[in-house]
Amino acid sequence: PQPKKQEEKGPHAIDGVKWVVPVASGKGGVGKSTVAVNLAMALSSQGLKVGILDLDLYGPSVPMMLGVTGVQPDAVGDKIAPIMAHGLKAMSVGFLIKADTALIWRGPLVMKAVRQLLHEVAWAPLDVLILDLPPGTGDVQISMAQEVPITGAVVVTTPQDVALTDAIKGVDMFRQVNAPLMGIVENMSYFNCPDCGSRHEIFGHGSVKPLCEKLGVPYLGEIPLDPTLRQLADLGQPKTVLESPAGEPYRELAKKVMA
Ligand code: ADP
Image 1 (cartoon, rainbow, N blue to C red):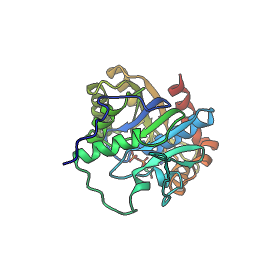
Image 2 (image 1 turned 90 degrees about the horizontal axis):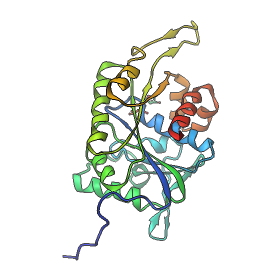
Image 3 (image 1 turned 45 degrees about the vertical axis):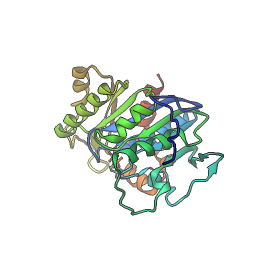
Image 4 (image 1 turned 30 degrees about the horizontal axis):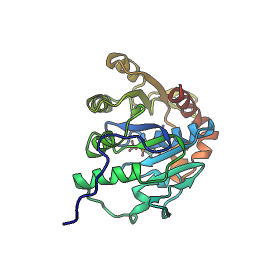
């Protein structure tokens, strides 16, 4: 057998990257990837150098949301070059595997993939690297915490009870791995109906703020349900989102993350 290569143990900073901000959620479908991509765009519009790493190994959606599916990254020296999209440096397992391939990730492989995506991609120089985590708590989250010091995590939830229970688990997970939390965002908070002009609180609005107070975690604000947001995400046009009224909550969120 080959002698084992000496690997750096414990969390260590990514060369040339100042902040690492994971975006997490307790369950799928609450808008975690949407927040990750639009927050990255909003930070970039503030003049920061921003990268986005899609660590959702089981369902990578960042390539689609950035409109760069099917591209293949090049190598630079002994590292992988990130894909440039809308001013962001982006990397995803989605770039490295064939589309529609069902991936089965065993524990040790997860750890290796997370390490490579964090430390063997030519990220530098970056002010902030946003991580789009898989939903829930699992191997990817544990590997992330073992590989890199976290600046602060953003947890996304909807105001529904079940999503809230999952959000509490998410908060608890970051505490267990000693990673600081920036706070919780309430997504799909309400819907301003363009036809009738009234506001509908589809999943029940406003339950996240009191939860934050109870948990002693900062509340990062609310994002309404907005059909144009979904359409533009599917089309891979985050710039249009940011420049439209739908981008306002993300611009606000970016200010809080930078504060
Ligand atoms: P997750 O990463 O939590 O699984 P996604 O970000 O993929 O969730 O979002 C799930 C779906 O909901 C996507 O189609 C996305 O465009 C849509 N979506 C997310 N947030 C909103 C919102 N505030 N308004 C409308 N659609 C949204």
